[in-house]
Length: 270
Length: 180
Ligand SMILES: [Cu+2]
Image 1: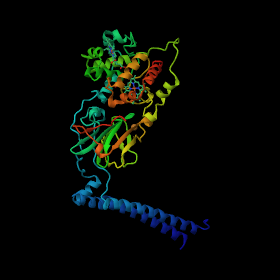
Image 2 (image 1 turned 60 degrees about the horizontal axis):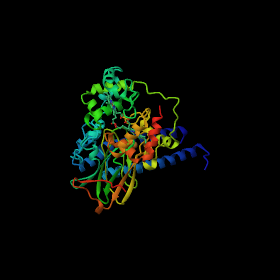
Image 3 (image 1 turned 30 degrees about the vertical axis):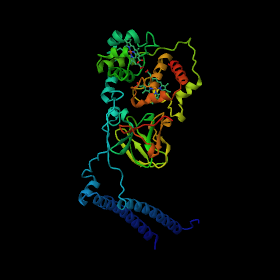
């Protein structure tokens, strides 16, 4: 055989093999498989082939075991695109009147509270977090007499506007005369967590850059008193409007000492 | 065996083509056999759910998560979320068919139960369902196996397999993990 002949033979047989494999694939995938499997499911050959080709629709979804039990939702907030849009497009100053007229008495005109141990600072908080909490107070998912009576008559838009207003205020600054006291143990829990306990790092949700749950509040600039009271409320289940128990799970795994440590650590963050 | 002439190269290529051809052929046959003899096909039942309101849905609201016996069938529901499973521990009876149903409200998670056939992706907007029979009693680890964010490596839960006699659902059919 001359080299030309042998080349030609290679090319022809390669093309033959490729075409053969393709034909076999089409035959088995679109004819043999659907016809045989269709027969098993009581579907006639022609319909089975049409379904395999995607020309006619498949079987409707089968009914799966679906519980009829209706529980009580922990929160009525839905992060629909509309809600997120309202939050991000709320004019910066639309909420000023409400904030100054109502909230300022406790949370301060600029979101820096009159008594931050009792009334959390609002300045620089994420607007989604503020909105979520206001919504929860209103629906009764989060219980607090003061806040529940404050939000009673607010509409969704008013809540979104107040949230956007406070979110855009500057955070309370760090006073240069303060001394940081939280130790490395708190830092490790906050930034690495503890795998053995299934305890994710606080920062994996609470860092503004972490892309965790939408409603996660930033923990900067609160007092240790407020932060520890809230963590204990999650731990005991007294505060229970966090979706899917995310924060209740975390707080439930923290010891009393760790709660105090972390409250101190985050109060020193700016 | 060094190739000396072009003929040697051609022969060697031919040999390898045959090896590859046989391998591909064997795999195709296995697939055909699974499809034509065992009637195995990929799951085609698609169940959707609105990921934004999972916590308000009748099925996946918090009070309905965990294990429940419904019409004699053991059904376990779990929400995979950043960065935990809700609930953190589920209890199931040994040697009985269990239907596990998962969904996610946020990002793609994965779920597997060590030492069993339970292994699936949990995609927001869909319900993932797996049937299994747990043979060994004890606590099994259920980690998230699809990177879902910074807290992914701390995301795991427990499947507690108890002997059938110790599986005692309450009047509503619910069974909870007891604190050890
Ligand atoms: Cu995950």
